[in-house]
Image (cartoon, rainbow, N blue to C red; front, side):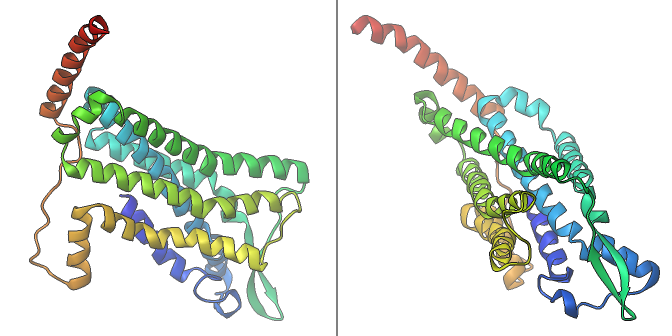
Length: 289
C-alpha cells in the first residue's frame, strides 16, 4: 500500500505547478475550472497530503512489526486484512482533513486579463497562526516519526535478547528483510522531511522565507524521499525485486512467489518452547553461580 501511495504522489508531483513545470509557465483555466485548479492543483494539496499519508503509513508499518514480533497472538487478531485496510483508510482520511488549509490557501484572480492563482492569508493573527502551524506539523509529521523511531528502537532491543536470538533461525528471511525495509524507510523519511517541516514552522516566526534557494532545497530533499523509497523496497525485499523485474523488463511470465512476513502458529509455538527452556535454565545457572 505504501508503495502505491509513493508512486501516486510521484505522478501528482509531475502535474503540479512549480515542481516539474514552472508556476509561471503552467496554464491556468478560467471560471469554475480555474477555481478548482487553484484550490486543488496549484495549492499543492495532493502532493503534501499524500506525503503526510506516507508518513502515517510508515508509522502503521512500525506498529505492525512491533505487534508481529512482541505480541504474535494479538497480532493475528488485531491485524487481519480488513482491519489493516480500515487502519490505512482511517489515517488517510485524517491526513486529508488535517491538510484542509491547502484547499483554500490559493484563489483565482485576474491580472491584466490573465487568470492567476495567488496565495491568501488564512489566519490574520500571527500568534494563532504560529500555534496552528506547530500543532499541524506535530500531528502530521513529528508524532508519527517519533512513534516509528521509538518502535523500531524497541524492536532492536527486543531482538537482541537471548530468546529472540535463539529463535532467529526459525523465522523466515523475508520476515527480517521486511523489518529492515520498514526501519530504513522510516529513517530516510525522517531525514528527508525534517528540514522542510522545520523550515515551514520557522517561516511562521519570520525566521525563514519561502521561494528562496534554501526553501527550494528543502522541498527537493522532501520530494526525493518518494524517489528513493521504491529502490529501498527493491534492495531489501526479494519479492519487490521480482516485481520490479516484471515492471522494468516486461517479463510477463515471471512468477513472484509469495513471502511469509507474519509470525505463523508454528513459529509462535517454537518461540514459546524456547522461552520455556530459557526459564528452566535460569534457576540452574543461578544455582551454579
